[in-house]
Image (cartoon, rainbow, N blue to C red):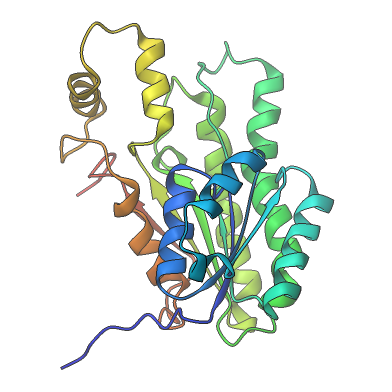
Length: 265
C-alpha cells in the first residue's frame, strides 16, 4: 500500500507575505513537514510574533526579514540570505499582496499602479532573485498565489482583477521559460478565504448582522457553491503538493481553491 510522503523534509522554500493569513499557514505547514523556510513581510513585529510562537526546535528552520516585494534589491537580499543560511533553495511561494476596491472608471490611476507593482512586479522580483538558486535544485518549484478574478473579473475590484489576469499570463510564460530547467511553475487561484481581510470588509460594510451571518450571505451573493468562505488550512495542503519533488509533471497550471466560485461545467 502506498503511503504518501511529499518529501519536503530538508527542502528550502522562500515564502513572501508569511506573517499572517494564507502566507502564515503555508509557512507553518512547511515547517511541520520538516522544510526550512525563509519568509518576509512589511511588518517585522508580526514576523517576530510568528517566530516566537513556534517551538524552540522549529525556530532554527525559519529565517525572517522585513521586506517590501516591490523593492527588487530588498527581495534579492532576503532570498540570498535564506539561500546562504540553509545552503540551497528548492522552491518559492509568491504570496504577498493586498487588494483594493473600486470600479474600472472610479479607481485612481495610482491604485492601478500599486496593484500591478504589488502583484505582478512582486512575483517577477521574487522569481528573478530566486532563479539562479532554483536552477541548482534537483526539483525547483514556483507557486504563485493568485485569485479566481484572474479569469472572471470582479467589477467592484477592477484594478485587482486586471493585475491578477496579468499574473496568470506571466505565470504561464515563466513555466515555458523554466521548462528546460525542470522547474515547475503553477498558480493557485484562491476565492474568499477566512482571513483578517474578510473581517475588515465586514466592518467596513456597516452591516448590523453578525460576522458569521454576513459571511454566509456574502458567500451566497458571490455564488460560492459550498456556501461558505474557505479556511487557510484548506489552502496550504495544495501548496505543499505543488512544492513537492513528486509534482514533477504539473506545470503551467492554474488550480482554484474557491469552493466552486466561478466554476464552469
